[in-house]
Image (cartoon, rainbow, N blue to C red):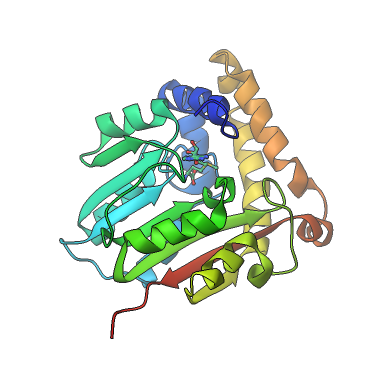
Length: 253
Ligand SMILES: C[S@@+](CC[C@H](N)C(=O)[O-])C[C@H]1O[C@@H](n2cnc3c(N)ncnc32)[C@H](O)[C@@H]1O
């Protein structure tokens, strides 16, 4: 794992998230729920999944890059079913195993595998842009989905992946098309910009608590992550874009 992008940073991040009161309080204030977000997802963004999947006790749900499992557990509380997740950060998976009843594994995109037709829903919330080979990984997720199953991804350009023209030109869209998966994409760049500005204010509110805990570096990270939203929206959107992707695996005829 060591050589994978940001791996050691995420190990430290999830160790901090486990014990920091300031970070948990900041997440609740910024996102409406403490999911130990490193990403850019608030409850409003994640709840969009509920438009595409009907609650059912027999559902099998997988979260790719699940962190400590809080997001998929939140979805389980609304949809029912059993939860699965994987993440390359051991610290995150250790916490997930303690917090939730589910199948949580340490694993990396492109390396971990599940049997064909395993899941009704796969979520990938701010994770897919780290995939070393997007086309191969989308092919794997398609295989893991049951016929009629849904892939729901929150996907960003401008930090890990370079900004392209629109949703259809992203690496993710091209990989979905290559695998014959039709998708819909919603541009939520404006929502992301407003959330980043809100995140910054919320982090500032807990500045003293971050310092008192000895977590100044994580406060600085939040400032660095939100610097980009200090510029006017028009210049922000030239560099960054955020999309909700929803793809459904075709039912067999
Ligand atoms: C930006 S965070 C998003 C976390 C969470 N889903 C959220 O929305 O806040 C990216 C997550 O993907 C995990 N991750 C990054 N690269 C990975 C890889 N190659 N394989 C598996 N997990 C990875 C990180 O440990 C982290 O939990």
